[in-house]
Length: 341
Ligand code: PLP
Image (cartoon, rainbow, N blue to C red; front, side, top):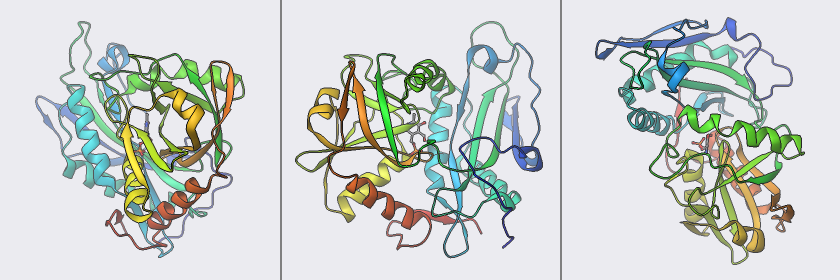
């Protein structure tokens, strides 16, 4: 295996030398996808009237390639990203990118950028993959595009949050999406709406926001780019039910580890913010970017609640086990890890 390049102080941002990397691209025209190919990282030319630029017909994914302790380049449950990508496409009337096409492109892009997969530094560093599909047809009337690009670029990255491990979140009254809308898809519009509340929260010294449901403005949904968990005082691990939120792959893996391997009672249900502030002894976020990030404080209605009276114990346990599996340090009981090389 090639030795990785040396990277200094990686953060979760686009690599300054991305132009030295390769990307994958495939075009959809006249009813079908072309074969797709690996090309140098490059800018994309679009008409000012392209659908994505005007009406936002676009979806994406986020996944990571790691160097494992066995010296392999591995990925965590990449087929789940492929399936979610296909579901997101369907929701936005984008022609399906088949799972096998997606998986081949992912394998190719990792192999072609092998030297950019950093040493993992115990899981904080990886090569992030960003598959994207956008409607490119120039049009004025609001309708689905007849032309698309599916592309994947990559970037070596470090931790998602500036301060590794613990964050403070502000509950916002802005709603990112809704049930029977795009909440359960990784659609670009869901992220556009989170920009302003996130920026305002950061200006107030928080690390990000926590969104509530759009019907009652009462139940916790998720953070801007991560799912939410609360360990209640009775030791039940609760996470918001699916519907309006992204079905996180990390979320599903945590539910399995917590119930099957650790023996916790787990629940997926409506979870009131009042209940969290009053009865949670530990809260954390989960996601490909966030991994497992503890929440020290939630600010709701101008009051700061200490939601961690448990010394972050469960988050640490879950983090160690999940990362242990991802980096091939521990047994992989569910065959979650795919060796790319
Ligand atoms: N929720 C949102 C809005 C996200 O963007 C993400 C992405 O990381 C997640 C949750 C977590 O999903 P996953 O665990 O599949 O990365």
